[in-house]
Length: 171
Length: 107
View 1: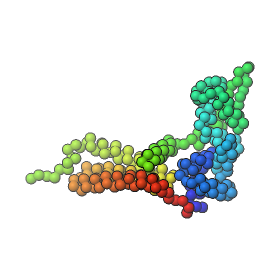
View 2: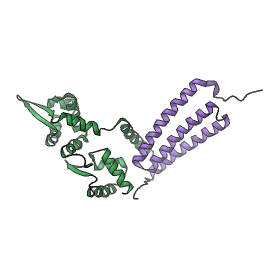
View 3: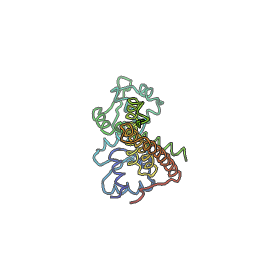
View 4: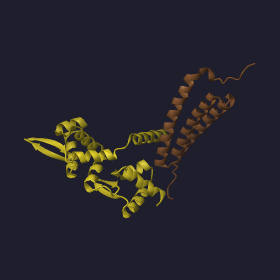
């Protein structure tokens, strides 16, 4: 397997749910290169893809459909913040979540549509109030803990961002 | 008769603590550089990592001078030579970034 393809496969394994643009950016490859090698990886079943809401996400084949949905949404900042709030508080009213995350109610609804469609979050009616809760809190927690970048990993991310910006400024 | 005393000897303990902290910090930076390089595989990242390694080497040289393993003249020469290497590596990293050099395309 070519070196580039091995790097792509390793990166997808380490970051399940990573999407196309992120692969291009993080590994500093040309889009065409990523396209070519990912296609080969898909064909040999080394990775699987899932197109959701305008982005294509990549996974190692170990994840089932529900897990792929959770991970794909976890890669989106706002959806991730909503998930984080629900993980922390168990259940919450939509207005609380929108406030805590700092988004408009309409924005929250848009993300909730995705989160409920992927069976991650459920809207429960409590009288005539709506309460949001995770469909499978324990499984969600375990899955996200498993894939969250480690502290050294986050350090490397920041380091590369810093070096990139310094080298760009010098340019 | 004057005995050759390393010029750093006078500063003793605070200096060895400073060198240890600097070496530790430089070691972490080198590790970060290596991790970033293994991810990017670009020449710029290689050069930045080598520059950080030169920084670490300076601390090692400082430590050796402190224990007396290196005499003063050699120590200063090596240290300033490493300054040159470090500056050169960073400049080269900037240059390659400007030229958009990219290694590890197809293999």
